[in-house]
Image 1: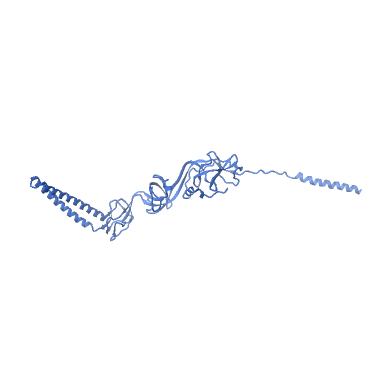
Image 2: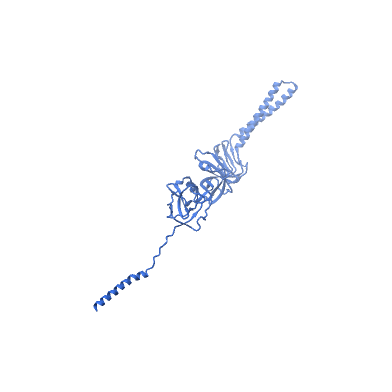
Length: 383
């Protein structure tokens, strides 16, 4: 009896153990193999576009027509007829100067006039005597010479007198606004003293200086943008100096300003000129270009495979870069960054890949041209 009980208990224990091993397997969930997703990137084909780089400069505001009045003779100012800020017309008196020469010139003119009358009277008398045969031809010719010399002396004295009168009366040579009138009664002035500055009526101009590289890009008729006190003005280049300024080493440029009456004469204004421009060239987003050791490259998408392609970059601004070589218009350039971008890696293109639109033209300030002038200065993007 006891032996049968022991054997039966052993069988029960073995059955329970077997059931314990089988039951977990029956209720264990099947493992699901997770599928690794590919990184999604945006792609875009190169486009034909225009890149225009702007350089920020500072110019000096001047009237398009301006005159500086200086006395031609030294003397004492006896009358001043205008003040700064007033509008004058051409020929209007500005001031009078006692040059101490007008009276002497008047006396010389009167003496020359009297001598001319006497010579003409004598010539008439000698002509009558010569016609009657009472004097020789030599005497008559002498009278003619005296009359001719008297006429020359009179004309010289008259010119000197007119000049002295002009020198003593300063008048406006153009109509416009008196910008400066820096004399007062009893002032002693000379030919080096500025009497007044008159700006002509009409548009203003801005004069600025540029290096040779930019001067070569500017031509009469080119547009410039002027900013002053939060207002923007449109200007047109009308003078490009072909001679370098020895003091600055730069070339002077002058641009007329439309509707620039509000610009204060003599003030400084910020302006922008085109330093470089490339039209109808292959462009891609500038953020799609990467650098390694100064060499530029892009990532292209080819049926899910990434390729690292070296490119030659032309000019670029904050949005677009000009591509000179390395890719074609049919290539698809990856425009988004991913840590999975490297030669031969697998990626998936976004649904709108290749349809992204970028601006065909962009204008920037001084920073963009500086980057274009030295590509190596551009920070290298992370690989």
